[in-house]
Image (cartoon, rainbow, N blue to C red):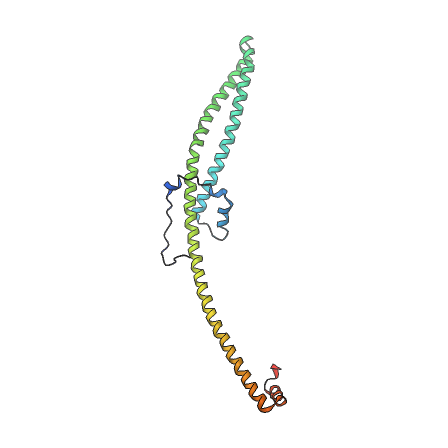
Amino acid sequence: MFNLMKKFRKTNIDLSTLKKNDISIVILDKRWHDLFQNIEKSSELTRCENTLKELLKKQGSLNNELTEIIASKKEYMNRIIELTTAAFDYNNDKAKDDMQSYQNGIIRINERIKIIEKELDEIPARIKKINLKLLELTANEVYQNIKRESSRINELDALIEKTREELKGYISEKEQLTDNLESVYSYFHDLLGHEELEKLDQIYLPNAI
């Protein structure tokens, strides 16, 4: 099953190879969490997992914010269009002030959009990097556990084989003793008869009757 004589070495996953593949986010897979039902996570793996969670949370938050401020920008632009007639055809100062306010809002939104888009461009690479690191740590911990459990399986195999041999000895001894008893009973039965044999049983083997 496993060569337990080999010294366990830390797994170094070839990240350059994995980067070519579409590796799913491990913490979003129930099977990944199931791996640790009977395996205690190391502090390093836990930190890595939490970092990945925070990155995913931040990515989701930024996407939501981006959607909201784009909607706000569209609303501001519509309001500016609506105020154009009052501001320029009727020279309405209130309309001009409102237009300026909306324009300033659009400027702020555009600046925020640039920041968000920059962060959203960077986050996927960070997520992929930490996800691959988490995968590497997972492989190390899982295979260490496999090594431990495989060693225990080998120990149990040896114990089972030993017990099997002992059981064979017990069975052989029982059969020999049974044959001896049957031979003795047969001899005394022929020598003394059934009634006398029962008397001897009552005297010497009262608890066996």
